[in-house]
Length: 335
Image (cartoon, rainbow, N blue to C red):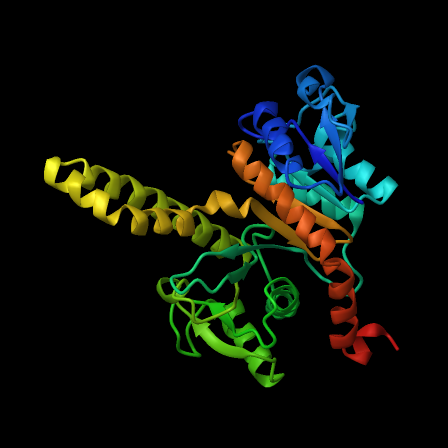
């Protein structure tokens, strides 16, 4: 049985979203135990579920919390969810709370996989062709060295191979131009490192406007640029949905046109709905750590739980450990 520890108090929408997400998730997952951490009086709807264990924790970490403050907030639902995962060896931990606080606390408590310099947030993106695209880092690190970007490439390759079953993933660096000489200093140096090492599947640079065409499997970027890319995509998708809706409401003729095009637009809406991906996984730590969207509703939080479930099932953390060992030069191991 897979055991998932959940910070039930972190969402912008409070425990209503996380409790609803847990209930939805349990409808289709019978081989899971949920350890629900939060204020007991707000989790009463879960008391009747035999698969749920409630841990009463009074404090809630605010969205504006610093990483150091989370480590000091020992009685908060976020800290306790991470700590219980560490102490009891649970298979995954999920939170919709403060991104910086959650990721920093998870990294400090669970520790990095041996050989990993920095953990990275990774998430799948929808593409025009339907080919799932993996992008990392999308926000765990504000600054990244070329060596760390190269290591993100390794983690992204392992993720794509084992989650999306891509035998030879095509990898690109996110840049402001496809030419080799384009990009920030760290991107240009990372390009050089990947090219000179003949990194498997490395194809060069890619611009943001071509990232979602479906012609690549993994995109490597620093967390600052990756987070901007993520939120820009979410914003454009939301804007397009609103504009299309307004266009078809214009008059009786456009409304009739919508009836004929309804199935096509419904499919497009499903593809562009970022909430269906639930959130992102912190790749590189000793455990499955899933950061759900801060504005999660019960649907998207249920998707985040499903992501944690699938990552735990895939044994991804051990596969990552093995991959790092195999690809670490002897001199770096100290042998």
